[in-house]
Image (cartoon, rainbow, N blue to C red; front, side, top):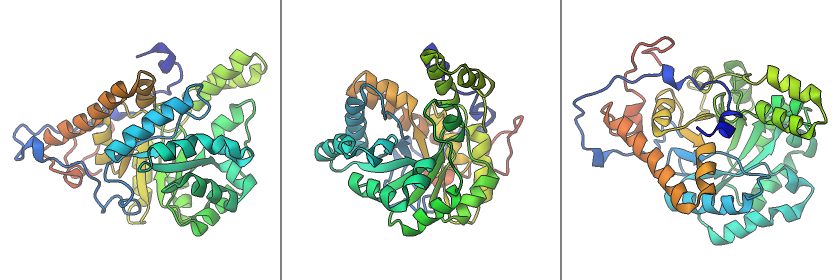
Amino acid sequence: MDPRVQAVEGLGTEFDLVQFIHEALPDLDFADISIEVDSSQATRTASLSASPFFVSSMTAGHEAGAVLNRRLAAACAARGWLMGVGSQRRELFDSASAAEWREIRKKTPDVSLIGNIGLSQLVDSGVEKVLGLGEALEAVAMIVHLNPLQECLQLEGTPQFRGGLHAIAALAERARMPIIVKETGCGVSGTTARRLIGAGVAVIDVAGRGGTHWGRIEGLRAAKANVSSLSSKAAESFQNWGLSTVDSLRQVVHAGRDAGVEIWASGGIRSGLDAAKAIRLGAARVGIAQPFLAAALNGEDELNRVMDRFEFELKVAMFCVGANDLGELRRAPLAEVERGSENL
């Protein structure tokens, strides 16, 4: 792994603690395997996309962001994947910054985009402005991201979350599109999930520890800027803060059982096998960011090769547990490992 990537990734997703029982005699043909989402799990978003994969929100502020977003949007449109956009925070005070997405819409009108705003911006700007961001994007859903650690450590952070749950509930009530609430690399606990379920959100994306960790990124930014040793030192203490993706997923799936909320998994998903494990643990959809960003930097062909690999590896995992579709994958037996359970 690129050491630059390693430097900003949190400690472990714990997917290595989830092990399938290999089926040496699957009673199916590989060509017949379907990875389309099933409405029993994607209860609120089944009509948005047939693929269980989505490109997780990223690239806002990247120096090559416009080019990368065009590549990602084209690839997602071709495959029928959902694509989360980077934070639309800037659009709240600079309408010209939305021009990039209008251009992408012209070139890839069929791409299904998911809007994205931070909780503190929702609290500060209000429901109507956030809904306006989604409408301008022609979004199929809207993400509100929770990033308390990042906001505390970020030099220009806005850690004002008071009234956040009320604001989320008001947004969910007013919106005509599904409202997704996600963390940004530190995971969602079962307790928090229950509060979000009560607020009426459609989807909870656990976004757990193991992938890009914004505590680490903000620490590096502070150290590079050399303006706040307090933030950079604190970032060292919090460099592995948060719930692992697996731990968070287990907690949120348990909290959301029979509650009608849809659970997504992101945070350190680095292969189609990781995706298969996340789906087995209860995720309706699986989000990936860093591997696709790295591939997109190398061009459209490389991006498509990496996306092909994720889909292929998911199918291989399904074949090797004898699962014809995602519903059967969710019933595949798991091996007894240190923190595994046959009852998950």
